[in-house]
Image (tube, rainbow, N blue to C red; front, side):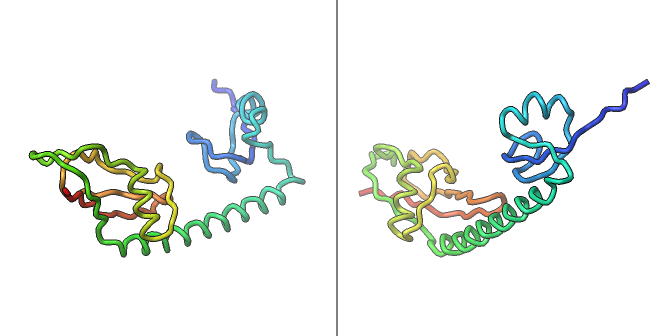
Length: 155
């Protein structure tokens, strides 16, 4: 005979990968809530007189996410207007460039062209060792991404 597991509702103050996003109200085992979530200030137990407070927090989070989503969609459109980034690098006879092209250099180029600061952690790029054209992906938010062509030109 199975024991009937009781769960309690908690409101999450932070994103927890294995559970849910910040602002969600979820059901968890009482021990998990008491021993981990609440002592770490990751969550709070939902009681009826605090439910309105949690709903207000959820609405603020949704509004903030919508604002970020609009901003990143506009940024994506703006970045997509940049067809290609040209980087001049010294190269050997076989096309192997001297030095490396890293995320920091891409961030600086985008900032110089657009005035928009991007975090280097938002950039996904292949290892660039040779002269040629490469695709660099910019991850702004969940489903919002942009792709820029980076062309390495010898000088």
